[in-house]
Length: 348
Image 1: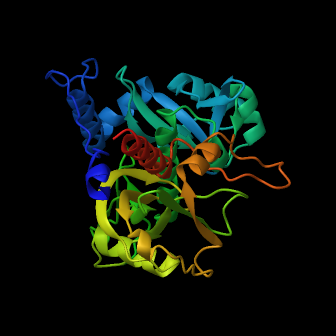
Image 2: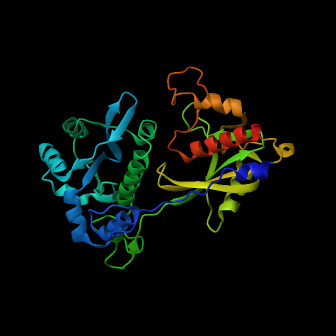
């Protein structure tokens, strides 16, 4: 029953592509946008031209510049090249900083998208000129629109990667980036460095009627999430998942089903590989390693439903209710998939 019900999650998604178009920045369709972005990564002159006609999102020491679109929602501010140039001049910069912009994507309206960190300038002056506010990404993740959170996360991750990879690991010499910021190269060793993500397995364990959530002491008060851990060198996804669950809560899982994946910018750039797994109800007794987790417990469907109704994060509660990761997090998706699966079981 568990196996058949879990398979109903249908984790595989189908991508529908538009019809084929020739490669120009004015054509539409997923394939054309991807080829356009790839061309910008390979051609510095084309990338610089795209920058002058594209949209730029500003950061200050990795903190994104956002604008309130309604009382509970924020969005990143897409500025044109001339608008950023004007803001930089007003804040005492000659505008040469614009060339440090990093390519992050292409909008459906075929505008190349870039990010730029203005960390040497006064953040208050930048925010005032742009009519926005710099907001820590951990807080912003609860307030950004669904499609915009991954874009901001990608931008922050690329900016951070460039900041900590300025030198070649083999020679100690300064590395040079291409115009798009998709790579850095050492002229002495000819080594080319590309942005990397660390693989992390995240799993929602179920005993058929309950799901397992845990929390680390570093989490905000009341927050519970699916279990997660970094993959060790040489491990498969399945091996890492089984090891992490055994280490953290003393359970041996079975029936591992892949769900989805996600880039996650905390604490550094991680690649989250999300799965469901089951344990036998007869072997569901937890043995929590408190060096790994502050707490872990089983939750019923009713408890999950209550937790989903809590507006997170409830900072001011003296006794905070249990609440769950934001909708942009893959852990939230796992929980919603499990809840949907419980509903389908109840109607069988």
